[in-house]
Image (tube, rainbow, N blue to C red):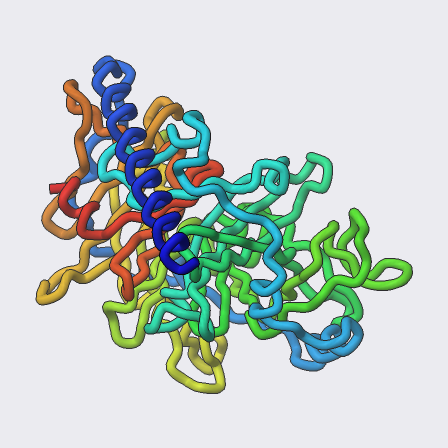
Length: 432
């Protein structure tokens, strides 16, 4: 049985590599056919420019009172934790060999993904994919307990059936040949912890640090970030298309689990307040840093701000950004970039280097097809080229958030309904 199991895994691995290689070759061929006008994208963003860490980058912390959380937890039967969610995973992702040709079109052309998976189409119908983070962010050993985990955010737009919702899918990634997942609805406690409401916002940025999950919010929310405790997952008791307390129990719009927020971070009260749109974790600083970028439209005629908050080291505040006695969280460093419409950000200091590389991905200038990936620092910017005409539209389409898993050296991202990973070294090789 073991021999046959290894043979099947080797066969699947060969099929996966063939599928990814075939997809990359096909997309490279397609890129070759793109005309110069079709391949037009925003120009070279040039070098990063240091920026003073002003009050516009300040966040103010608001903790959900502990009695609220305890009251809600007791009423719902006590927390079950992330391990319970993983243990009940009843949806599977298809690996690249089983994805459709249309799904694989979302994969990067250069550099090519080395692992790719497609989501359960029925389970994700009506949901829009968002940010990705992994247990490589949560702990230095790359695991949550004994598991390797990928977290993927999804949202339903307000105005659609079941709109104004956000959820996180917990993916059990222990077996690279079979990824399974279950989802928890994101919520915010209200009425003193006697009820909860949905987090009515898309999640474009997300970082899992220690036992906390930090997620971004959209422009309609005064709070820029919400924080969730992975040890406080609660079980919903009513299967209803509602959120919160309902006759006979607790509902999470049909989900079995709900995750209530434990804190939020409010934007500065200034007209130029910077709203984080993309997030990632940088373990190359001491203490570790929460890296953020804002989303600036291409026609806004102003630079994009990139900045870093320090994450706290106080055991009483595990997983939270470092704040002063007034609850203020100030940026430790900041830059301006001429790259517009940034949707993913990553900061990484190469071993032995005296500088930090910033990786930014953005959509194509014509809003269609593949996006672009840039590596930027104080000296300049580099991007990949693909196809005979030197198109820069080589990254995923549409591009998404970036999450670096230090233990494996991989970067995870999500494009449409495709989840994929590739080595950071291959990104640097493609970027030159």
